[in-house]
Length: 187
Image (cartoon, rainbow, N blue to C red; front, side, top):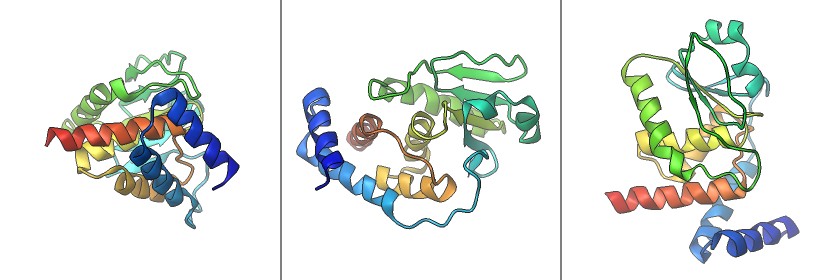
């Protein structure tokens, strides 16, 4: 077990009451990230996640009207601590700072409903955080689990084929594990 793995495990147990099964599941999720991936797409390009309607990217891309117009984006989920101003698009702002204090679990129903509406009505959505790595990936993963009925491992494996840099922080992964458990309990 590496030092970072021990540190991550200790942090999650002490500050978020992570259980043994949650920690073990998180380890298996991280193993997916370390598998060899062949992705030649640029880190700085938006990623098409689902069926030419759901995209993921960065704050910079969300502030590029020409890019958003080229992708025909009509709706945006902004998962940062900064407001995005774009009167030509519908924006859902999920107030969230970078780091281990981020709590997105309570936002999943709202973001899933927003994305369901986009898909049902033929809109195109763009989900972003600052770097397009952690918080936006968390929202995308929750949506994949919701709409595709996938577990976290299936959703993350799929997302890595679309956006290689996707990597929620350990606290957000723990929230996704708990979200998966709530979906299972709701069946």
